[in-house]
Image 1 (tube, one colour):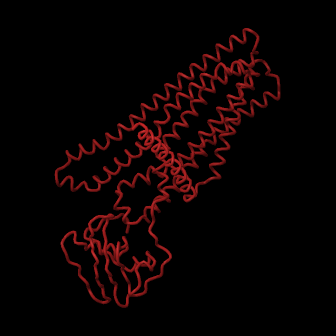
Image 2 (tube, one colour):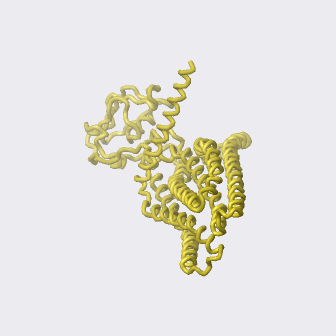
Image 3 (tube, rainbow, N blue to C red):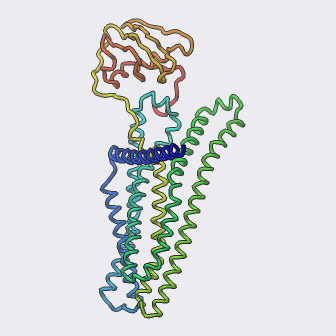
Length: 438
């Protein structure tokens, strides 16, 4: 029995890993389809790496200057150049924001175009009101994921560069601080797994809350007419409460990560200052090196913290990756490749057409034979649920018959271009919605 349970756990773990791989693969396909501005992201990434390099090299220069080498011209020039690079990086930091904003716009246009081309079956399977957040929120997550991954790599590079400089300066003192670094990484590794499911819960809660509010506000007159304000207030409170509870999980998670990071930083600073003072007293370290270590002691904790938070952000966004990656794989209607239907000469025919909305569900139409003749009026009469609207949906090719075929002057309807086919029809609904425009 225990072996069976262990096997199930292993299978679930492998399935979860497979889903992550599939999500990342889908996500990269989405980036290609949406035409991500790779050149701009690459330039922004190079800038981040350059700043990380300068930040790692600057403490040595500052330590030597502080130790009295103020009259070394080359040293002063290096200090000025490094400082200018850091100042310049702050000035052009808006460049990364511009790249993200530009890609967000592309993603929103790409997603909206996809939604307009979704098959009707997809819309009826998914609440259209729930799709709103896919355009407003999820589309923007694509650029956020890209920028966070690049920021994490740059932060990791900067942290490693500082550690390398630390070991080059003094191996003994660097080894004293190593256990604290390892403790910080291990502590975060234990906590970070929670970030994956938290990201998914956050997006799911936002989609559900948006769907509920959108649906109710669009039909507010019916709520008022039925005097259901108090009941809907309770339902709305439940919808927002779920979002609040998920947000509070995020707050607690962030607080726990911050506590672990701050404790690690304090320990790291203490080890460096105490160990450095002892070695300085023994003559095993000069003043310039201890100053360099002190400066790195100020920079390294924030670099470690930045790397950890970037990784946490990536893991949290990874929970939303499945939803975002799926934006590029939504099914589309096959509109092109067919011929233009000529003017109807004889009739449109339903030949043995059967149809059901769900696989294995009740057949709405069962081997229906029906002719619509050119120049004649045909009335379809029947009780509610008998299939009148379904016939119109099949005529418009919102759906395809499960069995049989629809023909146009003897030719299968599917042979014709879908856009040109629908342009042949005038469609008047019983309750016309009002859309902003002409």
